[in-house]
Amino acid sequence: MRMVKILFVCTGNICRSPMAEGIVRGILEKEFGEKRNCLSVSSAGISALEGYPASVEAIIAMKEMGIDIGGHRGRKLEKSMIDESDIVLVMEESQKRYLRSLGAGNVFLLLALGRAAKELRSGSSFVIEDGSDEAILSRLGALVSQAKGHEKNSSASLSAGAFELIDPLGDSIEGYRRIAKVMEDSIREIIFFLCGSNICENKGT
View 1 (cartoon, rainbow, N blue to C red):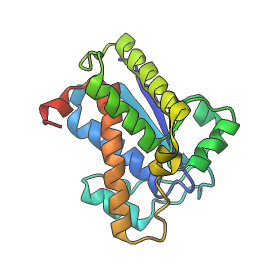
View 2 (cartoon, rainbow, N blue to C red):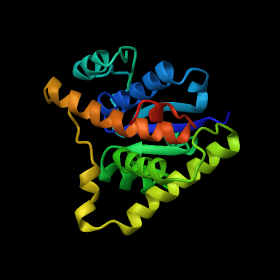
View 3 (cartoon, rainbow, N blue to C red):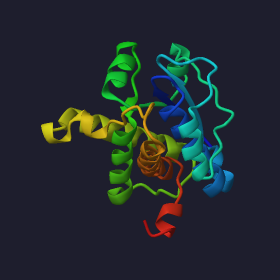
């Protein structure tokens, strides 16, 4: 099976991106069984606190979802990480602009890519259950094209700000919980589309 490499990027790599990485790992481990190797996931920060653990609130929010990120340590983003990834998912528009200024191609806001995946899953002619390498690469290309099409044709009412996940550092645990839930919804759409699973349909969602 072809492994799609996803890199999550935020500012310090102690809140948003480690939570997103943890959510992906949790979903793959708990719900995908033998298909869990369809994705490789990692995270880093543009101004990372190298070697720092995830914030206490992030650890708690993830633990409440049955996900352990206690062993996470912050990593500073390097160009090689971008080059080795199929998709780089960021939290804010400024992060996307910065990474693209470095020459990164497939960089998208996490929530924007989640919307694109949801649209493709709901109205696509793809055989979502097909887990062959050819099918995974085809879905990856379609997802990138869909997201880029949205960026090109976006209206003022669907500005990038509508898809941003603002840094919760310094916020209460409730703020972390809200962000975690929003992240999880988008991440599920992306995983279910890319990995060729019909689990979501079986759940009636």
